[in-house]
Image: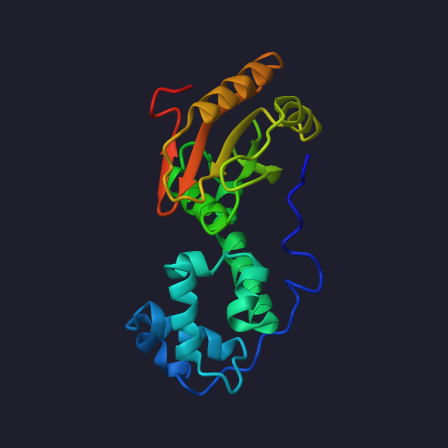
Length: 234
């Protein structure tokens, strides 16, 4: 089993934020809101310490390499570093970690199953930019609030190994009453494969034996999220 690494470990989340560039001052928030993706990303790179590099050129290269800004923020650090260097890659990683904290917050205070929009936004931010499949499990308490989100499988561009018994074991360790499983399709197409459906059935069967509810299996593909439950596949 491959556990999800701690994205908020000391030394990353606590990294000092660069001084604010005078390009757009404190009174220019409305200006930022009016910028397009490239302009907004360029301003972000200035504040992340782009130094003497042309932030507009860097923003263009990032968007050209990864697509929309949602795929830039969340891309693996090694991939970002190839475009903007290691220092800026770390700063963008800090931003992604903060974004996940913000999106995760309501899931720890509200019913995850009833908060479809919040859950979808969180999982897209977590999984959309990954270049390989990753299988995540959101462990929920008896009120369906989030206990933990853990990566329990990671693989190739088209497959991530999943072990139902490990999902059950971890649910018992966390005293979870239910789970929401999710993974990504790096191709951008969230359509479930036959392997996805079979794996879901195995997880449901393993959890049912110990009265652990499997609420849904969500597949993130680009800007879309497919629900196996809504599709009648579980």
